Length: 149
Image 1 (cartoon, helix red, strand yellow):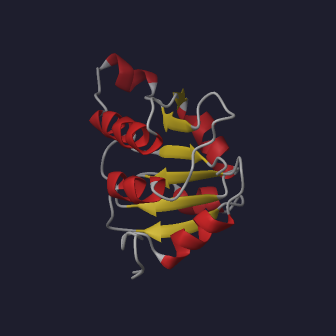
Image 2: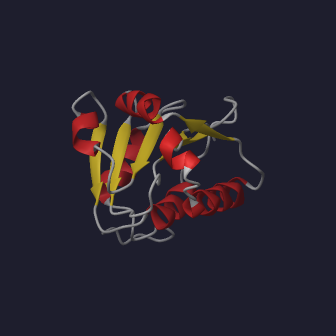
Image 3: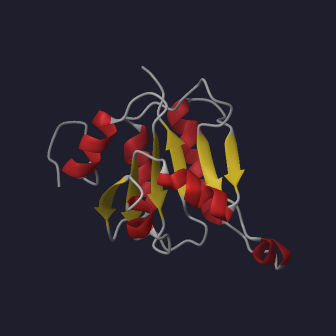
């Protein structure tokens, strides 16, 4: 836990360090509890543990510090549903919550990209870091691309 003025206590020292070290264009993955965080991080990204925390609260705190990239078409990416889940009409209400948080933080509507499951895994392997959370929502994974101030 961090006790600093205007810094949310949900942001660990490790996560704050990652956010500070990221450069323009670097990506960070907030991974749900089902995401293969440890195996993805064997390919290079730094693993940050945030067990027990949901992504919405982490996202809200992070977006107060992290600018999103305005030079890319979609600075936010979500893992798309697999065809079988689309066919059965699986709903992903957490996506609406993410979009609300992102749009509020940026003060505008931000473009969000849907990325096929295995393409998402490959993209995550190239991320700066993966934050392994306790998020229980299915398809709760989100990638943010860091912008400039």
